[in-house]
Length: 210
Image (cartoon, rainbow, N blue to C red; front, side):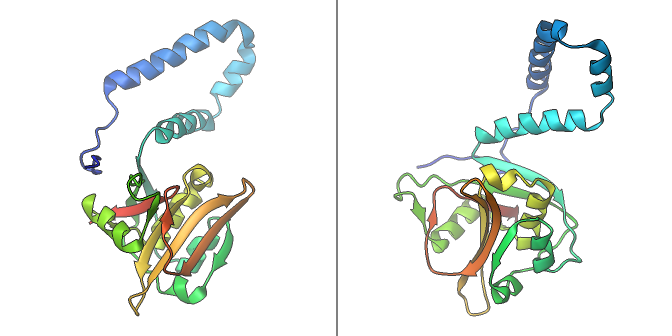
């Protein structure tokens, strides 16, 4: 049986790990200090975005080694699903009737949990019905489209390396989907449509706690 941690079981970063990360970075700075101009360093240290960029690199490295990613993001619930999609800046490939069928969700700030199920025993494929069971196993429900869009608006590079999606049933009980990815390393896009196909193992799935 495949083992995984639920969002509530995931252990957070320890103080010891933080100390080690800082120590490693300090050692690198001390080693390469002779190669930096002091006045230029002082100017860079005054840039408020520096720390955020450094954290972004660290986050991407950690996420690349994880099968569970959690992003807390603010969500503008005054937007329609279509407006939320446009705000991501991605190329839209959408069926408007499917976009309109998406549950609106709630909460001005949410934790979106992205997971990647083990499909090694499924030939790398999973149906929407079986995917719903994977959400249940983790104590999650599929994330609404506006919440997933908010993550990709806040971090435009997220779906470049972590192609992600969610699904829902329309009023007729048919499965619909929304995916965010980067096509051929060139076009950032969003696909929203309805079909009966299966998901491939490359996708991360977005959920919210029940």
